[in-house]
Length: 152
Image (cartoon, rainbow, N blue to C red; front, side, top):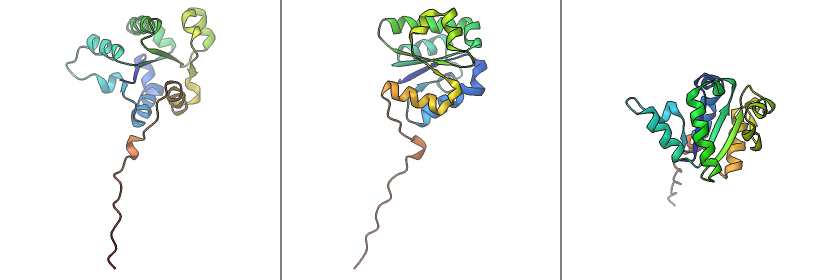
C-alpha cells in the first residue's frame, strides 16, 4: 500500500475525501477507511493492517484529530513506525496552524508538512513529489486506438 490516511471523521466532507479520491484517481494505492473497510470487517484489524502495510502515512492534523482517542492511538502507532524508519510520516495541517501543533505536540514539529489551505490537489501533488509517486491518471486510461489500414 502506498499511503495510509489517518484523520478524524469530522474532516471527511471538507477535505479528506477529496484528497483520497484525487490520490486514488492518480494511481496511488491508498488506505482510506470509507473505501478500504467493508461491512463485517474488524475496524481494529483493518486499520492495523493499513498502517502495517503502508509505506507512507498521511496524518490530517485538526482540532478534531487531537480530540479523539482513536486517532491519537493511530498517531502513536504511526510515530513508532516512523521512528523505526519503517514509514514516512506526512503531516497535513487542516484548520490548525503549525504553531498550535508545535505547542501541544512538539515531536510533530520536526516534520515538514503542508496546509490544507492550498487545496487537496496541491497537497496531493506535494505528497507525490515527496514520496516519488508518479501520478497515473487512472480515469484517463483509455485503450489505444488501432490505426486503420488503408487499402491501396
